[in-house]
Length: 300
Image 1: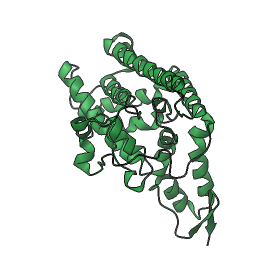
Image 2 (image 1 turned 90 degrees about the vertical axis):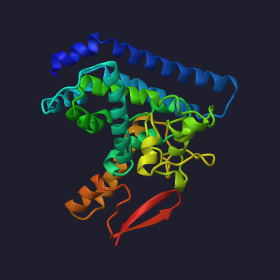
Image 3 (image 1 turned 90 degrees about the horizontal axis):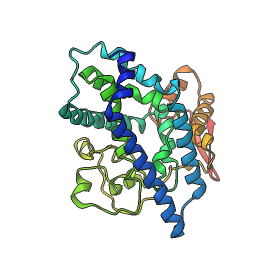
Image 4 (image 1 turned 60 degrees about the vertical axis):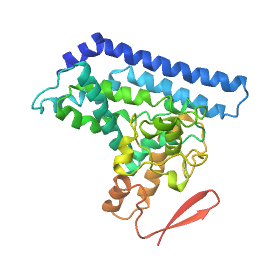
C-alpha cells in the first residue's frame, strides 16, 4: 500500500466515518458522566478531569497535523515484505480486530515491563480517579512508539489502513470500561474487558499490579496467566503518585525521573539498561533511602 493509496483509504472509506462516530459517542458519554457527577455532587477531582480533557485536546491537535501521520507512514515499508495481502472483507475486518487485540495485549503487557515504554504508558495510570475522562489521559508521544507493535499484522498480510483502523477500534472500545458506575457483569467479565476487569488493572494493590492487559477480550489474560478478578475496592493511581494536575508534567514527568536516575548511573551500560531495561531494575550499587514522600538514591 502506497502513501497515495493510504490517503485515499482514509479519505473515502466509510469505515473511517464509523470510527469517528464511535469517537464522538465516547466523548459524549464522558461529558454526560461529568454532568451526572456534578448534579449529584459526586466526589471527583475536577482539576484532574480538566487536565485529562486538555490532554485530549492537545492530542487531537497533534493528530490533525502531518506529524500525527508519521507512525502510520512508517508501517508502509513493512507491507512490501508481505507474501500476500489480505483483502478487506467483512470477515477479514473481524479477523483484523482480533489480531489487533492480540497485538494490543502484548504491547500493553510490554509497556508495563520496560521503563522507557512505561514512561509514556504511566500517563494513563497516573490519575487517582477512575471515570470516563481517564481514556482522554493518554501520552502525546505514545503513537510514535506503539506502531512498532503493529508490524506483525502488516507482515501477516493486513494492509496498513485495515491494521491501523482495527487498532483504533480496539482503543475506542476501551473507553466505556473506565467507570465505577457499572458493577460486575457476570459471564461477560470472564470473556471481555469490562469495567470490573479494568478497575483491577488500574488498582495499586500488589495483587492487582500487572493484571488484565486485554483490550477487548480478557481471554488473552486467561491464556497467558495475567487474569485477576475484582475482589476488592481498587485504589487508583501509581504506587508513587505524581501529585500534579499540570498536563505537561503529567505527560513528561516520568522522563524527568529517568533522566535523574540515568545521571546517577556508572557507565553507559548501566545508563542504557536503566532506560530500556526492566521497570524494576536498579544498579546493585544503589541504596534507596525513603525520606518523607520521596525516595533518594545514594550511590555506595
